Length: 161
Image (cartoon, rainbow, N blue to C red; front, side, top):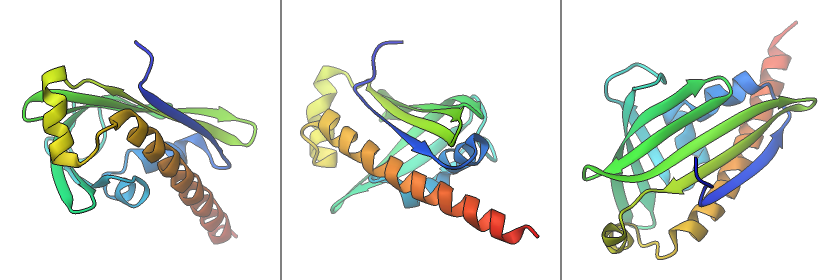
């Protein structure tokens, strides 16, 4: 696969399977992601290869929705292809690798928009430099993901006798 347009990584002191559950949870990711504000499964009850979901996104006063298809759904990788108005828009991928402290999470995205469609998406989203905006969003999302995963791990440990 070609090099992502934007990507970031973070070490998380939580098990890889917990992090996978967080990144593949549509309602939960709405609390962690910057533009993504929620979604619902269209043909499945949860993440699996081929499952489709409608995602809603918000930036300032602008709202838009997309339909995504899950391409990877296993504990080490969650990925999906995004379409809008029937056109390929992007690919998003979370790679989760166990390490000594818990795991390392890498979030990446590839811009799949046709050149002629980019000005339309600028009007819809208000984002002129999508690569730079996605890089900022990835960094913020990963920081929130780390905080949520480590808090969940601590809460789970507190519940055990």
